[in-house]
Image 1 (cartoon, helix red, strand yellow):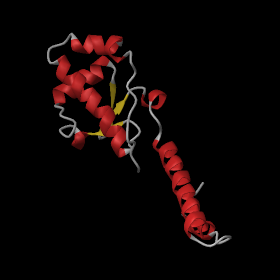
Image 2: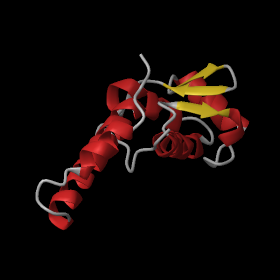
Image 3: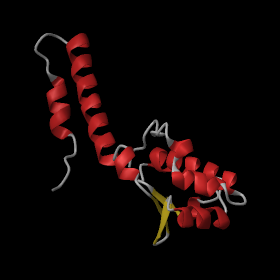
Length: 136
């Protein structure tokens, strides 16, 4: 899985009712930071919004933060971790990221061939034919 170099933060995040409710709680600001770190973690690791239990400390979280995020409706508890609510609405899917990177790589190979090899070489076509294809 390839990760994203960025994630989207809605400019309405500070005014989101779920965030406001979370921040009104004891240690809510810490849980809010964990939420932001969870977005970055999921984007970086291409998990499509899944946060494994083993990664909780990696995103500076504690079990109490996870419980707060679940009760606020920002995370949903699933087997072996949590899902970030609304990930698919606001973030790019890892399959989309992989497809974009594959096209960029193919374009770079074509550009390099045309720049550095003799006219009509087209060695980039052979490299494209050897690329692994997704099995449907």
